[in-house]
Amino acid sequence: MVATQPDAAPRRSRSARDASTRDLKFQQLAGVLRRGILAGDWAAGTKLPTESQLARETGLSLTTVRRAYEELVGQGLVVRRQGAGSFVTVPNRREPRTRWSIGVLVPDTQLYYPRVLQGIEEALSAAAARLQLSTYHYDRREEELDLQFLLDSGVDGLLLVPTLLGLDDPAGRADQLMSLPVPAVLLERRLADAGPGDRTEHVCSDHGAGAYDAVAHLNRLGHNQIALLTRGNNPTEAAVKSGFERAMQDLGLPADNQHCAVKDRWDPDLADEYLSRLLDSSVTAALVFGDREAALIEGAARRRGIRIPEQLALVSYDDETADVAEVPLTAVSPPKYRVGRMAAEVLLRRLTEGDACPLHQIRLRPRIVIRASCGARLAERS
Image (cartoon, rainbow, N blue to C red; front, side, top):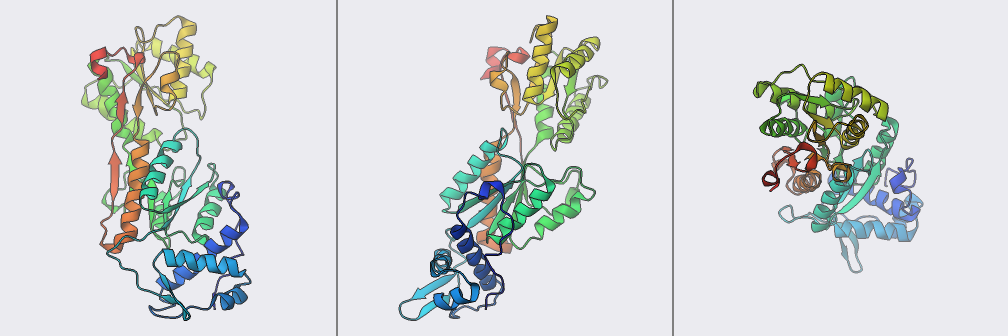
């Protein structure tokens, strides 16, 4: 008897609502059966219920049951024997399984994440794995519902960009995610200053290193008075600020020009205010997080008659829209595609190797893309 009714599904995420009801039901049934097989409810060699029996027990159609069994056959968990029925088989752990189902949970699909998703999709496609995407729109309640939806859909593993910023116990939340019934790899999220006690599997951009390299680049161009401008309430801000401060310290530069904005969203008036602060402090260069905010500073400079980069050099952080700014922005460019691809590859390796796979905690260093806003010489662009 199958214990879970697959058609009692939780609320779907917006990205999943286009899937047909029939597709959702067969995926859920396959997930229920898969978890039962992997948990040992049906031992290797055990005959599974016939399609007709399972259809009666669950109230699902024969077509839905048949597709669920075909899914398990494709995953190497079930074998069909002509005239005898469907039986549990023992997967060959030394050979990669095909048709893994991978759940991907991201806060949005705008700006930063399309390149991350492209990397994930290409890695999964190369492994004949299937992607199931949910987007929670930075809503904590929707995040929980979408995560449960992916689990109930029978995914084999998860790639997650979870909310950790602003939680009372981010370490506890990370432990919960690592204790889910399927393996999970975090993307662009890790516990800050957790040290050796961090047991999360993650692939992240090293945003602190990216900020460090931006300051070093500006310093090599002759700038000693360098400021940092940021937007608050962002998971990346703390690492950018830390990297900036460390670079200023290591390079022996004055640390009293750090003007960190705490507003969630900038506007032209705020840009005018922060430009005035920079000029009053005799700052000649600034690292601005992110591209939109740097473009607003350029607009404020134009209104004041300040020339960029001659009177103020700028480096933006993110490299999403930096190239279309009024003065194309030199930018710190996180390796978004590589983060997505490597995270997917780590998860597939863990699914294939199980506990024999070492824990991966990967940080990738962003690169500096040179454009007109910092006054770098052409030779430095190669």
